[in-house]
Length: 168
Length: 274
Image (cartoon, rainbow over all chains, first blue to last red; front, side, top):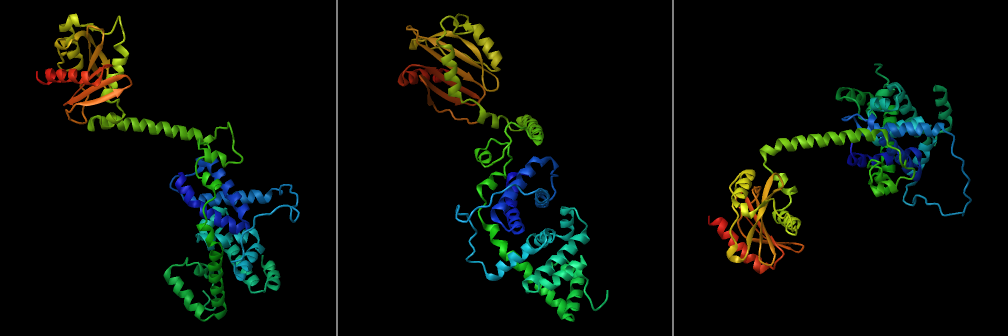
């Protein structure tokens, strides 16, 4: 593992983190933590194995750890206290914004699989190995996530959602 | 398979292009008769494209410096890397650094072994790059020994025969100090010195005023075969040098260039004319 191959993976890590968290700064924080943990566990890296899968796996585990931990104490920022940098959204199509908010409505575990398949075109088996879950679970999360997303986008989220919950 | 349904997992594998050709074609035939499922497949495909479209631009964004810095190992004394690490671990030696040190030692050993093996095959090609150039060697030797009043040489010029025999034997080739008496310089003596890869010889001369002159004789030359006179200046020491086959000669003194050139010409004529 060398710096150049790590550098080559950063854009993909950022994209996935960005889609997963829906927040640019938080995504880059997650990528930074991921790389830091990767270097601290470099002895676990097996030469010749898939660097991308390894880094994505580290990112997933970090995210799981973060979700388990209680959020750090924060003080709400009053409106006008400071100018918070925000992502420019003028060019976003209405539909894409809807898609983003729809994605955010998915449970984490479903969003994760949907995004890995969509953005990384990762094989189901590879996702299963990376997340440490059975292949069947990957498939059911993907199916539920995609269908839920479809329903939300079609404006049909309410009724089918309750039906889906029964299935789960 | 029930001809009227598509397995959910097959449907998604179809969307993701993860099916082998025969199965893919079978699903496509089924979907042609199942408009509801076909619509779902199209929706999922569009959904996948839309997600890619939504986040695709992130791939082309420049990587922020703080992340770029993380591509290098955190312990490297890279100022940008350490500056970009908000929570570095000063003083802590990461467990993997030992492996890296071990790897570094191994590389050094392998490199040394490779160099040793290459040594026979490619004589001194790499050594020449690292070697001290002839005029510099000569100038340093001159600067070190010529000011020495009591022991400027190892073997005095009064025992010239012994000096010649000894130096010739040690250098592995006959060497003989030129006679510069007609130019006012008498042989003081000579000494053996370490060169870049082995012994080299230095002869010292002195004129009536105590001005000293040294002739540096090396047999280490392998690179070029040129014989032209060259002039070099190392601090106060002027050096005329030339190369003849494996021999390198350098005449050094703190006298002006013109006079040194005259002496060098005489030395050259005696050595090359012998």
